[in-house]
Image: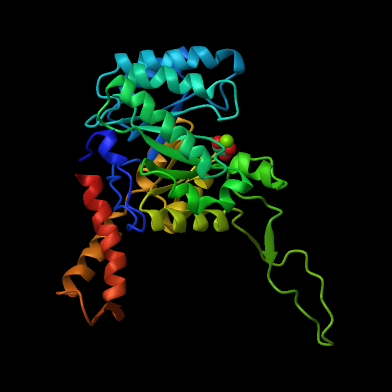
Length: 350
Ligand code: GLV
Ligand code: MG
C-alpha cells in the first residue's frame, strides 16, 4: 500500500473535481475465513493457519451468542497481538473483523476497543446490514477519530455486507461513500429474510425455483402431460451478484460472494463460488477449513485459462486489430478479457 497518513487520504475534494482515483491496492482475498474469537478450539488453530489462507476474520456479529460478545471482542484483541504474520501491511494473511450491526448495543464498543488496541494489525472492518451511505459515513468518521487518537498512519478499510433490500437498492452510493471502501459481500441469508424470499438456507439454490422445458403436444396440439420433462434449477442470486459487481467495478472496489452454509455439500459450494468468480467476484467467505481450499482454487484462474489468455495476448501484438486463433476471432475486446485473467494470475503469484 502506498497510503499516506489518514489525513491526506481524506483530503477534501474541490467542488466539481473528478472522483478520486482509487487507492485500494489488490491484495489476495480469495477465502475470507471466519472464526469465533470466543471459541478456544478455533482460536488454537489460528497460528497454524497464518500463511495458508488469504484472510482470517474474527467474527463478532451473527453466530456469536449475545453472552459471548465481550469475550469474542477481547479474544480478537489477544489473538491479533499474539499471532505473528497476522494482519498489517505486510503479513501473509490479512486480519479482518466483522463488527456488530450499527443498531446493535455492541458496534460502538467494538470499534472503540479494537482500533486503539489492534488498529495497526486490522486491515479491514466488515460492517453488516449496511443500508446506505450514511452507515459508511458513520463508521468512516469514527475510524478517522480513533485512528488519529491512536496515531495510526495506515487507514483501516471498510467492507460492507449487502444483506438488506435497501442496501441493494443503494448499492452504488454505498460503494462510493468513502475512499476507505474496500469491497462488498453478498449476504444471502439476511438478504433472503429481508426480501421475504421463501428460502431457509444460507446461499445456494432451491429445487422449487426452476423452469421446465416446454410441454410436449400430441398430434392434435393438446398438452401431453409429462411430469418428467426436463427441469432446470435457476440461480436465485444472479441478479444481486451482477448488480453488486457492476457497482463495485464502477467504483474500483472488490465484490465477494458471502457464506455457503451447507458445509458437507462441497460440490454445490464450489458451484456457488465459481458462478461468483465468473461474474466478477474476487473471493468468498469460508465457514469451515474445507471451504478454504475450494475458494483458493476457484478464485484463481486455471492453468488452461492463463495459457490461453497469454496466447491471445502474444497473438494480438500491439493490441489492435483482429487475429484468428484456433478458428476464433480475437480482437481488442477479447484481448482485454484475457488481460483480466493474466493480471489476476500475476497478482496472485506476486
Ligand atoms: C451473512 O451474513 C448472511 O446473512 O448471509
Ligand atoms: Mg448476515
